Amino acid sequence: MKTRIRTEAAALWQIAWPILIGQLATVGMSVADVAMTGHLSSQDLAAVALGASLWSIVLVTVMGVMIAINAIVAHEVGASAFDKIPHIMRQAMWMALGVGLLACLILNLSTVVFDYLQLETRVQQKATQFVHVISIGMPAFAMYRALYSYTTSLNQTIPVMLIALMGLGFNIAVNWLFIWGHWGFPALGSTGCALATGIGMWLMLAVMLWWTHHAPVYRSSFPFTHREGPKWSEIRSMLKIGLPIGVTYFAEVSAFCAVGLLVARFGVVAISANQIALNFSSLIFMVPMSLGIAITTRVGQSLGEGNPHKARFISWLGVGMSQVFAVFSASFMSLFRNEVAAAYTSDPAVQEVTAGLLLLAAIFQLSDAAQVTLSCALRGYKVTRIPMFIHLMAFYGFALPIGCILGLAPQWWPWRPEQAMAAAGFWIGLVLGLTVAAVLLCTFLQRVSTRRLAGFHS
Image (cartoon, rainbow, N blue to C red):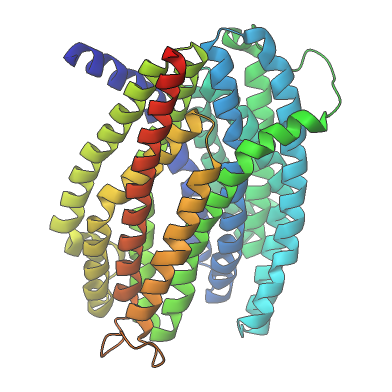
């Protein structure tokens, strides 16, 4: 048993670690945008922060929809049905193009929210322009994520890591040219950030297409040998798996964004502390999220092999690995929360509030790592609808309502704290919501995996 655990854990980590570096590089693009415009002007910084918030919500939702391809292709890889993959991927690229164009439209229309935030006129103009320009990269991003899922399903994760690192380097270099207007380029400020990211998405898609065309590992399943029109029945079956994942991602990201907006009424200290705690927690979250993608791949391949015993073993092993990491991350955040806060800001008041939020973030490490890996295991089983409802209930039925009661202490609610707990109250709500999600998903995975085993033996 120990040998089996070591072997499968190594296989999961071999897939996960390049994904982790790639995810960090992708997050690094937004970090670079904020950091580089922060040295230009407060207006440009505010425009990037606002525009990037809308971009991130739509981006993560699209990412969730495209994850369906990972599970579908992984099943065919496990069954050694490589001849079926080219057709699947051609239809997946049509789906990605449609999803990307729709996301581009939604992103442009969503700038209407800026009208209700009472922004300075110049900041609103810059934020709106940022969104309009960066949206050009959304179709490319959707198609890139389709190919990302394809190559990940073949256990080829180092290419996606290298391409993401290349994208980060390109983003920083072109930011430097377009923000300040070096080497004769126009000085575009925050709009230059958006242009760099939008162009970068198309470059990453081009490199991924080039790589899949030339690398020998893709020859048995290369999808672009000939043209093929879209077939709605097949695209619809993909969306049936992908849309619930997209809604799940949207629910989680929008809930955290909603907390940021609700905390804003408590002033600059609360806003800053919430943003720092969220930023650091998001970086830590990349580890279980990357492990989760590896779990989806391995579970899908095992089921494609017709081996539900192996799929179940991988599912629970992956969840267990996430919990081991969560113990370390929770311990680190608890012990070094003051040092982490000090690394982000020199303001003593912000440091104090941030340290308190990081302690709450440490508490939800176990449940957060569990819920993402449990969800990914279920995606390997191509089960996505019930997890979507679980996440919606956890975040909008528990996390946000409880957070509002504790954080705002509304007068109309009978069981409220004597004094509003501000950001801490909202984070307590997140702890409870993530715990509910983890418990329900754990129960559901047990049920799904047991049912699959029973069907295999009958």
